[in-house]
Length: 178
Image 1: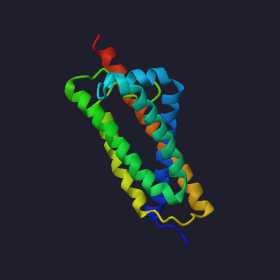
Image 2 (image 1 turned 90 degrees about the vertical axis):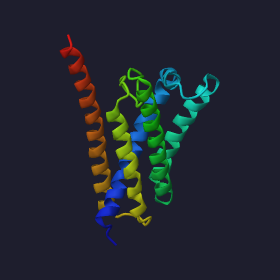
Image 3 (image 1 turned 45 degrees about the horizontal axis):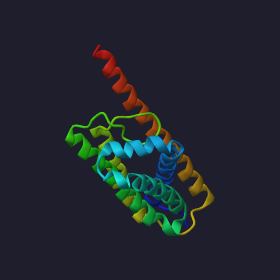
């Protein structure tokens, strides 16, 4: 039986989420000392648990990637990813309200200061976490899986491209000030 468009969209979103969290976990684990410092910069948890929180966030992201792969756990993983994205958006929002606009978001890769645009990005991604509720746990056909994998990869590339555009806009703005 062929998937309907919403199921194909949900499967595509699961691929996108898996790629985003795999990339994020990789960056955090690959430069753990930097990530630990970023968690400390947010000043949302007491210093004595910063390392535990940092390790838990990395483990949670890795676990999400694994759970997103399997149809039987995909809906739970998507909703859990949505909650984690809301936590990240909330942490950025709290720091923006506090006036801490120069701290790195901790999203992975090059340093990127927190911004309301990043909060919005996380809110949009979190709201899309409801898409997999339409997901049929039956096995997709090879063509449906291929389409979802390709579409998810294209969306992931667009996600990364939008991050570069935001970064370049910030750089241009700072150059124009001189």
